[in-house]
Structures are given as structure tokens and as C-alpha cells.
Length: 238
Image 1: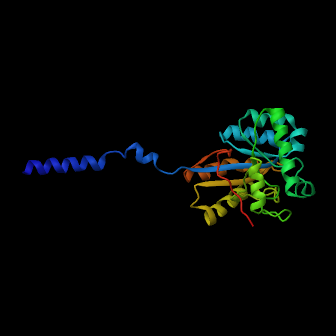
Image 2: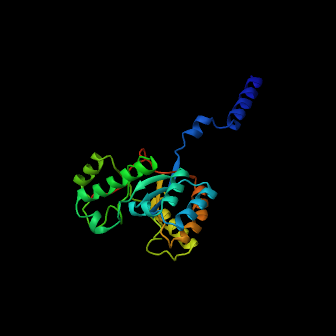
Image 3: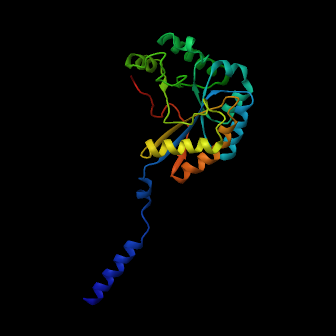
């Protein structure tokens, strides 16, 4: 009897010390951060940004403006060649042209989609509204959403706004701190975080902030990923 008790105790210890089965580890939900950059491509800033993303091994999503695609073909080609995701941000980024009606907004993005298909052989269906879908120029309601979906568009706003468009002179540490504050206050329970950034000609500090942003979210267990047609949309209906 004593021998059986000893065997039982030894087996119990071995069970406790055994590694967790890989299946249990695989069941842990994955967490993703999506770096998104609006308003490109620009001639100087975008290539530098692409170089830094490559150095840090970070995927990104670029919501491009059609007029800038035409002006900066080399920067656009580098973006495509580096296998980043491309999204639509209208042809003009002009309030009056974009937001005159539902049809004018759809037309601007459809023209850009055609341009990217013809010049770069890529199919782009993800869109971002200039100034966000909650802008005050054109009401975002179910009718508008249905029209966009009927044209095969998927809509993406953001969770964290680095404010680098309004405040391009904010230093890299300040931009990182903005990400930290917004994440810790609003999104600690989110498994997906979309970050809004820009690639305007004056966004040098955005580039310099990327390494700190990467390190912060990696330490929290996030992986970096690009948006695509399979990503869950993010928008709000008024």
C-alpha cells in the first residue's frame, strides 16, 4: 500500500512539472497592432518611412491620395514593392470634391482604385475617409455604408490618433506617450489596435517614433500586421 502511495505521489509531481501542451498555448488569443499612414505618397518622407519600416521589420498600411500617386510614382512603386497594404484615401483629399454627395465620394475612391489597378496591378478595396468617417461634411449613416459596401469598399477609421498631422513637431517620445495614454485609458482590452499616423513631408518625427512604438506594443504581447479585405472594419454610424 505504501508503495502505491509513493507511485501516486511521484506521478502527481510529474504531472505538475510537465510542460503545458502546445494546444493550450495555441488557444491564447493573438493581439495585433496595425500601423496606418495617411496622405502619401510624398517624395521625400515616404521613402524614408519605408526604409525605417524595413529596418524594423514592420508591416504597414498606406491610405494613399490619387493626386500624390500620380506625382510620386517612385515612392508609390517602392511602397508596393515592399509588400505593404494599400488603401484608398480619395483622388483629391479635397473636402468640396470628396463630400459633395455619396456619389462624389464613391467616384473619387473608384477612380483611385482603377488607377492603382492599371498602374500597379493591385486591387484595393479598403478605404479611409479624409478627416475620418465622423467628419462633419457628409453624414455617415446606414444608407451611405450600404452604398460603400455595394461598391465593395471596406471602411477603416482608427483607435489611436497620434495627432502627428495636427502636431508634426511633436517629438518621437511625445508621439509614443500619446499612444501609451490612449491605449491605457481606452483600449487595454482590445485584441486589435489601429494606429493613425501620416506620411506628409513634415512628419519626420513620425518616422523616429516607430522603434519606440514597436517596442512598447511587442512587450505587451502584440504582433504587427497590415489591414486587408479580411480585416474587421472599424467605423461608427451617426
